[in-house]
Length: 102
Image (cartoon, rainbow, N blue to C red; front, side, top):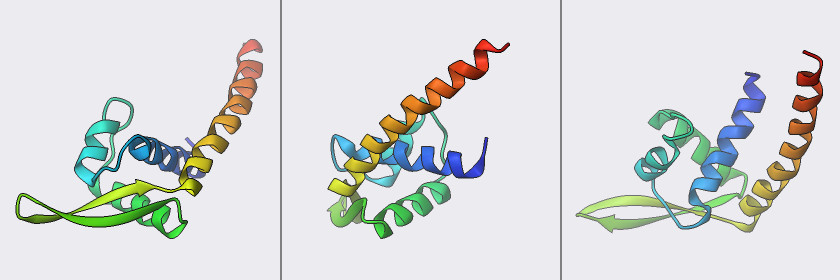
């Protein structure tokens, strides 16, 4: 798979994982496991990139005596998911075109 396409898919997957409620790293990995496996290092790189792009915010809260970072999707992040859904419609159309040729 093209690296840029994969990067974009992973970004949207992470945003979708926190869309319904704020979440933290381990839970995001666990929630995504049915569709894609992510290492912690890959996830935290994605989270930093999304934060820098203004698509999520981070807050720290104590949990069992330790600080845990919680991630919250912003309006920009919600817009990115909506854009992806539109882009995906085009991808499906291209896929169908390619597959009818076989």
